[in-house]
Amino acid sequence: MLKDRFRKFLPVVVDLETGGFDCEKNPILEIAIQLIDFSDDQYVLGESYRHHIDPFEGLELNQESLDFLKLDLNHPLRAVSYTHLTLP
Image (cartoon, rainbow, N blue to C red; front, side, top):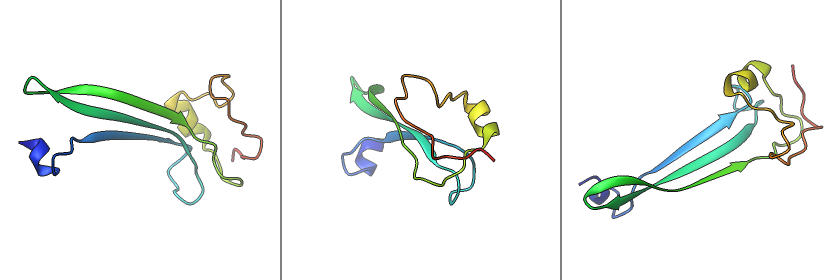
């Protein structure tokens, strides 16, 4: 069984949303984690966690990435200040 291949740990799905493709210049903006449970001989969705991340100062945001992700960095639910980031 799949769960036995992971030393009794079930898989976890991790999703990162970034401000571009350059790992040295573009920040990670959001991370989501979806736990997978095993119930009644089936894999089922467990708890999920999602967090907005305040990027390091001096990183660049790619507007095309933000448009593709439909991320509004000024949305009040983000509650993160981005005054130190630059859009090229």
